[in-house]
Amino acid sequence: MKHIIIWFSIISLIIVGCEGTKTAEEYFNAAEVERNAKNIKVSLENLEKLIEHYPDNALAAQAQYLMGDIYMNDLRDFDNAISSYTKVVENFSGSSREAQAQFMVGYVQANILSDYESAKATYNLFLEKFPDHELAPSVQFEISNLGKNINDIPVLKHIAS
Image 1 (cartoon, rainbow, N blue to C red):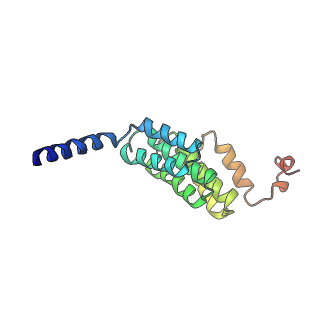
Image 2: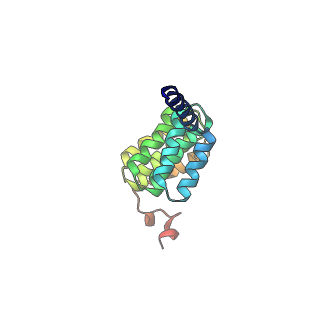
Image 3: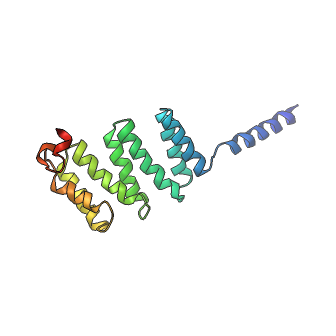
């Protein structure tokens, strides 16, 4: 009887251990499904697990960027949004999301937190690192209009009217 219990315990541990880790794609897809279902905490947990288990997978940078997007748009937690976007820049340098994440840090600083000094530094760093990026004109526009009221920006005046 004692041997049966031991074998049953070992088999149970093996089965449970095999079910624990999903593929990077499965974590990412689960995160998107959960986000769409408004299960934000579960979505973030899937993204964190993807990054933890597959830090070298191309989806890891995408997952970190998506975390920033979730914090910014779904949770309105701007400090964690900046932190998540900054992790893309620091941990996934060279990824397809690096420039966008750098831009988003400046965007949140300027347009949501009204931290124009930090935004200007972040935007200038963007222009140093990515002078030819498609977002460079937007960054230059942001810098030239930092702190201005939307009504004081001729190109955007029609939006506020």
